[in-house]
Image (cartoon, rainbow, N blue to C red; front, side):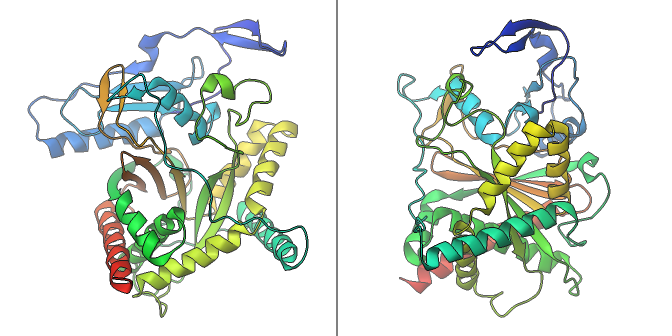
Length: 409
């Protein structure tokens, strides 16, 4: 789904705080799209048509004369049939997932609520108010926040196999590829080598990206590659909440865009650890652990909120655009239900989410569902080879899993 600010065809109302707002009149015919494809084609042919259609929709701007969402329904036997599109102005992924899950029911028993994997950061330790912990916190915070500011303003990644560096790359066609990993397998790796689920997932993504850069590069590339990990900065005690609760005054967690950035460098050089997947995971664990001993992400989130309040959404949007443009890839990770969902009594076999219209050649989104990890990769068409990238991700997953089991049989 995609979104932009609605300013027309409105009726003035007042919210709970007495502030004037606008009630928008919604005409479903304007928002629900049912594309028609030729009949009698093979599943791969339908899949290619859907890819082209999604790429085309992703490059289009939503009309500013109506609310900023669309629903696209494919009636042919193709994977991932329904597609919803929202503009990021409506809210971030956490907000939109909250809205989605509020509409869905458990397929096995609609009277029961959806349940989600634990969201407790058990591995995150609190830093004491004094001593070495405080010194480390201050140093890491200053370093991460300063580096984030520099990357968002004037330090730009060079051209690499995952970054074309073309101007206005956000308006170029994209291809979307899908992967599915077993959460039980990832838990086994976690139990064998330690760390958190996010450590293992990030290790797989980073290792797969390294393998692709080595395979697609000319062997002489040494450009700086930076992954931009998008993190929710809300204080969350119970996963997702109903949008009605999130939009109340002083709600916790609140609706809207509340996220920060985590910049992580990806080595494009062949190092001594390139053939040891467990050492790669260990490096990722150490890096993320150091990043956790920092308030850089939360300061970035506060900076964005301050910019939005005092400088306006346009200035904030330009800052976010510059941040993404200067990096090589973006990663967004969310948790989904453990049970099978249904929407209007229609079972949901699988689902993914993807951010389109961003100034990057590669973006990766991850969501868990029914014991599986659903990975979607949006790649710049004609520049990144999606089949090779998929193969490299699968190879990274297999190497890390097998190495972990061999390390501690």
